[in-house]
Structures are given as C-alpha cells and as structure tokens.
Length: 469
Image (cartoon, rainbow, N blue to C red; front, top):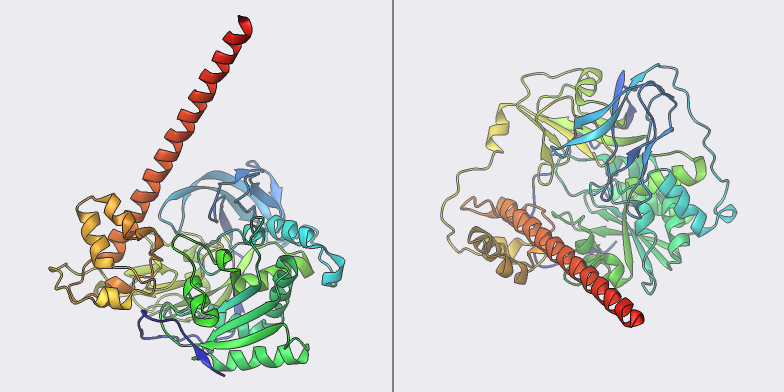
C-alpha cells in the first residue's frame, strides 16, 4: 500500500503504545454512576428524571430540543440519588445525574434493524441522535449534526479515522482489530445517509495488521468498489481531520472552514462502531472503549467502561496503583486534560486515562526563556500558521492581529510548544487568543442583533403612526 501524509508540518513522538496487544476487557459497572448532562459540543441537556426515580440501562436522563445537542442515558440500572453539579473532565462543574446501582442490570427495550434496507436515511439520523452518539475521538460533536450537512453541501467521501496518533492511546487500534465488522457497517450507514460515493479507512503505517484485517473483511463483503483502506504516515497529528483530508485526497479545508466545505465527512472508527450498534442493535451510547495506561497503574490495558464510572472505581477494578499517583490525564499527553480528582467520571469523549508518578514533573510546563527566532514552531505547525507571531500578538493583547494571523484555525495539537527550544507556552496562548476572538465575535453579533431588533421596532412604530394619520 502507498503511504499518504500531509506536508509541511507535524512531528514524530515516542509512541509508548504499551497496551496495543491488550484485548478489550469489560469492567464491572460502577456502584455509583455520575452522568453529566453535557458530554458533547453544543447546547446543554435538561434533566428528564428526578431524585428517587428508578431507571434502567438506556433510560434517557436528559435531552435538549436544540439542533446541536445529544441526549444522555443511564449506563446502569438503579435509583437517582442526586441531580447536582459535579466535577467533569473539562475541569468545570456540570449538572449531573447520580445513580446508585441496584446491580439488576436491567435494560430498556432496545430495537434495531436487520438490514439497512429497512430504514431510511432520515430515520437513521434520528436514531443516531436518540441514541446520543457523538464523536468518540475526543471532540464529542453530535454525530447526527455531522450527518446533516446544509443544503448545497454535497459529500462525496467519508473518511474513517483510524490514525490514533497520540502516544499511549490504543483504543482505536483495538476497535479496528476486534470490531472490524462494526466499523465497516458504521461506514456503510454513513455512506447511505450522505449519499457519498466513496468510503476510505485511514490507518497509520504502524498498524499494518489492522489495515490488512479491514481490507480482508472488505473483500469478503465484496465492497472493494465502495470502500478502500489506505495507510498514512505515523506522524503527529496525522489524525487531525484537515490533515487526513489533505494527505489522502489532496484537498485543503479553507480557513475557518469544515471538512464538508470540501465534500468530506471524517468519522472516528470508534464512533462508527457506536453507530452500527445504534442502528442494528438499538443500543444507546452507555459505554465505550478506553485505554488505561501510564507508569503507575498496575494493569494497563484497553477496557470497555460504562459512561459515568468514576476513576476511583476504575483504579480498584484494574488492580490499583504500584506507587504514588502524581498526575492524572484524561486523553493523550499532547491534547489531554490533567485532573484534580480521582472522582471525575468517564464521559463519552474519554479516549484514555493516563496515570503518572514522580516523572510527571518532567511533563510540567518549563520556565520560558526568550524566543530565539528559530522558526521551529512555524516549520512544524500542521495548519501552516505562525505560532510565534500569534503568541506575540496575544501577549500584547492585540486581538485584531491575532485574528488576521488566523489564530482561530489552530487545532490546539500542542506541536508548537513541544518543539520550542525556548519552552514558550505557545499552545496555551494561542488557545486563549482563540477564545478571546470568538468571545468578541459573540459580543459583536449580540450587539448587531440588538441593534436590528431596535431598528425593526422603530420602523414598526413609525408605520403604526402613519396608519394612525
């Protein structure tokens, strides 16, 4: 197979894929599940249960009528004992439904279809939304929205993202090896919904066995004319949507644009598995595969974990720690979020949990020294930005310059900070610049809307006066 990659930019990291040969093991459901009502990009859910209610696995706990949202479901059966703000992996406190397990493991009635011929594209999208499916690669964007492109946007290609370029994480790799049929079925479902002509499964070239297994499964199903498997170079961040599209199709997503602007939808392989389960089994997103790794966890591996399971219960179930825990990270070491408590629950976007000891202090941000103008951050930026200039603009509080330098296009991969010999906190500052720019845009949009509303009111009053004359 030919190996594709994007250029320029990116970097090579120590892979640390210690758990790649560990098959998925299902952990026992937690004694208490903490289900945040916001586990997705978009509008928050409103609770549909109250304290004292008994729920079953799959019961809807919260939903929202907003277009960009995804409902959440009970991952265990039992009684709702609290609806309150709880600490979540983002670092914020989020309204959550707390369920005490009755260990009956009772499910709501889940209905799937036997074949895709039995269900229309519209019904598929509704089912995916009702089952609470979101992107499992980390962003947690509602999948039903991704499968509903605006009028005029034609999707010709769906890319299944199996790159998994962050160190330590091996969840997607194991999904491709152990659930290849579900990955392919999920891709077929998306091709039907989007009326796309081509499906591509992208696998990094350090996972050739997964690529070959998928290729053989596609041949057995006689799908070679519809789906192909391609290898992409093992490089970080090869798994970025824009980077995959550029590497495989040679298409460049425009500034502040989306993959659909170039006729593409990119979907994580774990999400495709969840889509397949939702359509063919009627199963809502109540669990997911995650990688448990790091230097102080006794039994690193890949586990199927119920949504809402606190880290403390995970530690206990996988055998505990072999020495003192000093750093806990949700996600990978490049884009993950450090946690302050082991009571934080697993959410839909949790791809991995990493446990580190004293060596974690070498991961802490080092003291900055003056920029030496070496241009490494520019050379390695996978989005073609100029991190050093955006950083300088942010430090001078020059949002206009930051915006003109396309700070909003930053994918927050962390490469610029990683390669900087002066240890400048480039990623953090560019992220803050992005947030400030987007906040300013929201303020301006609100002012414009208020002005238009006032103008319309005055025109209406003027018209009424004219009628009165």
